Image (cartoon, rainbow, N blue to C red; front, top):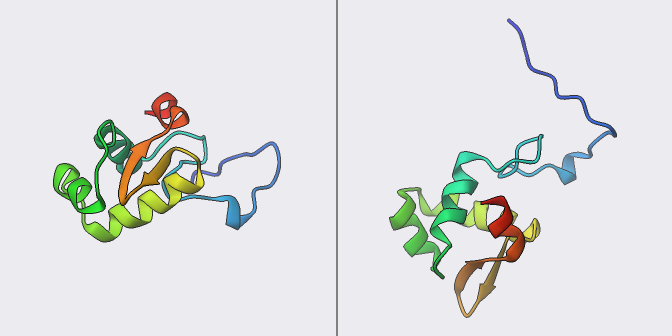
Length: 88
């Protein structure tokens, strides 16, 4: 069995890895679908309906996208940031 091994310029700490961002810096399909859905401000439940993803997946993806600076929350609704627009 062959495995893909990603080469980094510098070692990456486990705490730096995010499930919503691939090792090459691109968004995962789940993160990309959430970013696309956030072209309009939405609640987590609205995102789950629009993307057909379970609410637990939406919440974890949003947490990571906020940490990455791609999404922000205002009054219980989430929206894409300028950096998020560039990624999406």
